[in-house]
Image (cartoon, rainbow, N blue to C red; front, side, top):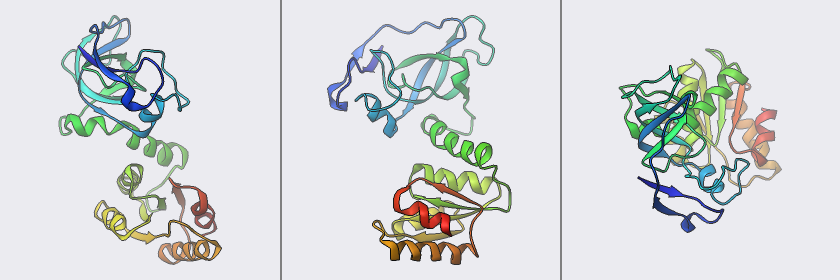
Length: 233
């Protein structure tokens, strides 16, 4: 089968597609016929050795996958042959078939196609963990999302609205704010890319005005000059 392999750390163009042996499921493992793979910025860093997670060589990048269970190893109870699955697997997604722990996978709903499923675990999983398990967001509360126009920002809008919260989206352009409103945000604030102290104060005042005196939670995907005025609001 074909796999995109990283045999030593280097720029993305230095790695190649090669033929390798098909995987075999060991105890507690599942072989997946991969239909789609999600590629995120950490994958680009991993193959260059610039990320905290460094898989043993050779490996395939690709931290999110979706596909169909082809075989299962001894003791597997969560999945059966033929199941549609998705998963956040760390690495090993850019290949035709992969072998993973059964606990790295979850059912892919029939209503979700493979391409959507492959882009689901990291962004939505990260946001759900932040809102539900860390921030304990409750219905009726408000959330300010900084960097709302990106992948995590859009998932923040979806998850917060599903949890019954009011969402104030902050982004760097009207085009991004329009997208956020289309995706469900209740309000939008445009901030400048480079902020001096006066612009930071204006941003803080804008947040207070739009939110009616402040928000319950800030989901900060930007940091830097934007964090302090958001907290002061």
